[in-house]
Image (cartoon, rainbow, N blue to C red):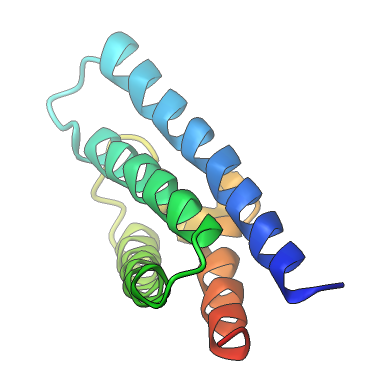
Length: 124
């Protein structure tokens, strides 16, 4: 498989997860009325982050590559922080995309940034 097709596959999956995360956030904003909207804000942030990553993955410029690595590192840190807080403390009234390390999304929020960073390191 060519290196570009791996990047294209990653861009596709980030686009797919962006739609899923933004849809989740929209549903939660419209139909949930808790005192704490933090999980919804996290899901909306994640959806926007995934959308930007999907766009940048398709670009083949050095600047886009650097920006993508930074955003993937932010995503990975967010998944680890939110996932750990969620498992140890359970402070949220409902789940976000990053809750339990993305268990509700087949752990893709944890796996995709690792794969993306590894691909970008190889694909120079």
